Length: 421
Ligand code: EPZ
Figure 1 (cartoon, rainbow, N blue to C red):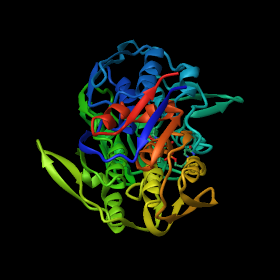
Figure 2: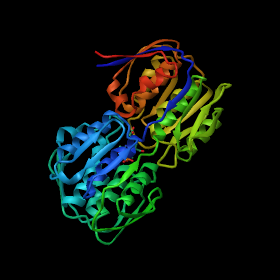
Figure 3: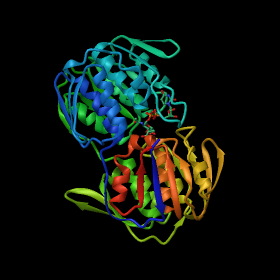
Figure 4: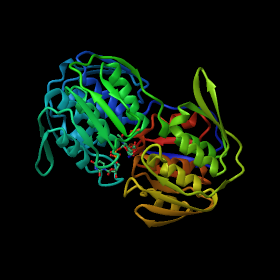
């Protein structure tokens, strides 16, 4: 198992690039099989989740050339509605393949998708939307069999699930008639997916709001698309710059995708400024005079993103006073807290959804373990703040969502080494 060796505390300086959004790329790649001709997608992050999604698409016959940033997807060889089970299990995001398969074949059979340990992560909401569209759903102990062309319908989601919203959109773009999706999730990655689908000839309105309408069309044609910047990676690097009191330039970003994150950071005393370079937004961290405690509750967009909860907790260990964190989305998203406590953080776990942080505390370097993607990134930030050596085991999780994070950090002065074992 490979590991990071970090020597902290680190003062960082320079510019750190934000890659394309993982949670947009993982939907736009499967969406391209809905077209009859090839698509070209750029600004794709070179991360293991993307490479796994490409393998899954190739397992059903797609031809994909990926150079680490640009992918050319030729869907003309897609001839199967049963994606590779082993691969599906390795990637939670693979659930969004089902909508396109149903739209294309009126059939799909698959096993329970995988994912990280942040919660049960059931797929009942996905099966429910397909059933609302008239698809017949049957299951054995670990396989699902879906049959029937999705019908244009009025769909009401059980909750504002991101991938269930994306599945509803992709299942209905080729269904004749008007589909309404109510209680839709409104994340920016969903709007980016809809922008790509509309460029292929789909007729989607309202993506990025909680009410989406889709006019089904007969055919979709390959298109070109540039993935939006990853707002979670941007927020992670912003918190890193603030927590290490560094002068960092981070971008490109879309500040509008981070409105509440920026607002909360300002309430905590963070100093930063947004500037434009080559027509794109960047953010620069400024000298800090310490932080004050704040409360955070994670919500669906435009609420505070659950994927930035763990980096924010690390920052709040450096804030004076008591901060309360209410994680409303997942029930297993505090796995990293034990490691932070070992490093000296004063955090009390009140319930699987609530922790209280008392700061500011000095963090000391330790040997720790990353158990999920975003928690792992938070522990990297902790290692860069802590005094002494920190070893982080379990890099597979971090590499799933952060492109070459150690190289990006070394370029801004971090003392971080990847040890392959
Ligand atoms: C997406 O996951 C993201 N993943 C997650 O990012 C993100 O944390 C999450 O949305 C919330 O913003 C991708 O887009 C690939 P949900 P998703 O369905 O769609 C429950 C990362 O680190 N639920 O919005 O799977 C679920 O258990 C990842 O990049 C059901 O109960 O999340 C959770 O409690 C982590 N039944 C809540 O809804 C279902 O059928 C929200 O989940 C589906 C979800």
